Amino acid sequence: MKTSESEYRVEMTGISKSFGVVSVLENVNLKVKPGEIHALLGENGAGKSTLVKILSGVHQKDSGKITLNGQEINPKNTHEGQVLGISVVYQELSLVNDLSVAENIYLHKLGASKFWMNWKKITEDAQELIDSLGFEIDAAARVRDLSIVQKQVVEIAKALSEDTKVLVLDEPTTVFDPTDIKKLFDNLFKLKAKGISIIYISHHLDEIFKIADSVTVLRDGVDTGSMAVADTDADGVIRLMIGRELKDLYPPRNVQVGEVPVFEVKNLTAKDTLVHDVSFSVRPGEILGIAGLGGSGRTETAKLIFGAHKKKSGTMLLNGKEIKTNTPVCAVGHQIGFVSEDRKEEGVFLPLSIRRNISVTNFTGISGKLGFINTDNEYKNVVGLIDKLSIKAPSSEIDVKNLSGGNQQKVALAKWLSVDSKVIFIDEPTRGVDVGAKVEIYNLINEVAEKGVGVVVISSDMPEIMGISDRILVMYKGTIYGELPKDKFSEENILRYSIGKQLK
Ligand SMILES: Nc1ncnc2c1ncn2[C@@H]1O[C@H](COP(=O)(O)OP(=O)(O)OP(=O)(O)O)[C@@H](O)[C@H]1O
Ligand SMILES: [Mg+2]
Image (cartoon, rainbow, N blue to C red; front, side, top):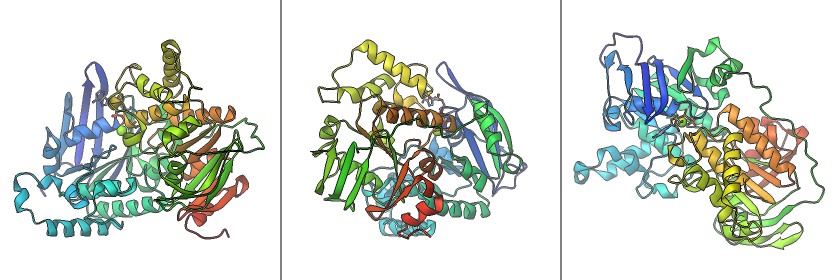
């Protein structure tokens, strides 16, 4: 590597960028040393992804200067960025579903030389790379068949298949459970020891204080400060992020939880997934948490109930009456809601506007009970939700694909919260959402519960699930392994049940 005249690996100075008339970054600075983990923080829409996309060549800056090892660079596309050694794991997964894991990892080497590629060797190399990360994935498997966590690991492997000097991770842990996060962090420490610079974007402040050496905070496209992590704390960075103190992350609830369950499942067993003998009930106004490690069957259980997976046996009761949900349409007809964890694939319609996205759930509400909404009310409802969830967008007519990741998540949630449900399953409600907006989402979930809806929240975020639930079920190997009442909530207890152990 060329000897550097600067102590920094990457220096971005005075970066500005507009999309049309909307200014997204104004005079932003970011400096990262070799072998340093540098956290990039800010609320949804603050400009974090845009800044790193300028570094990697996805977008071009309007003004400012970028240097790599003291040399000015201006990557015009991601290929140029990669050649310079800048690899990014983007917030939106970008794998090709129909190719194998190995093909995805070495996709950049495809093209003209395709016929000269030694695919056996490439699959072996890919397998070695994945094994070195400590995750179990078959390099010959098709990406379509992987779980969302495995897809994310492939993204990381892909970024490391280059001669990487700067690795950017844009919210890499949002889909990971605590054991996966630990593995990822171990990998990052190894890369750091090799002198690789890491830019780490996350809304989990606890992660920042575990792994980062320094931090830069953005607010509305302006950088509000850079400092060593040792010189600040969570309150300090929150103040720089949102410009005020945050009082209560988990707002107090004022709900009368009903006695009689609104919804019950008994011995529910899936035909095609590991889910078996799942029994639980949820009462009106109750917020029931479902915890567990990735692959324990939490999402599969919700999808089974929602009619997206086939059932083998078991019964479901809504207000004491047996119901069947063989398809999602039946489930919606029974006023069962489901907010998917997979925002891009199932959560929102990217090419449609915010208004159309929020309203579409109402229109597909099939059941005559919901009826059609008139445009005036529709508009009011949508604008109200945009305001309530502080969705950052110039208008309700903007296409969802142009929103920041966290704001897309809020639209996905708003879609379902605008429908009258009797029971609603919310899978990872605040994935990718900033601290300020988290509070808004918790408030909204509380409001839904106050209406007497049974709310089931699946979450890998430990503080969150303990902060909002009345009761927590923990899944292990496809069934409910343990139940924790509020006075037994602790990370240790959740983890013990998650790995099939009893409480101490
Ligand atoms: N291609 C685009 N066209 C128009 N506007 C865009 C485009 N990409 C991003 N924006 C806007 O730029 C602003 C910053 O978005 P960016 O994705 O950088 O935010 P972020 O800090 O990464 O947020 P999050 O935490 O939600 O991921 C947002 O208001 C977004 O709507
Ligand atoms: Mg982003």
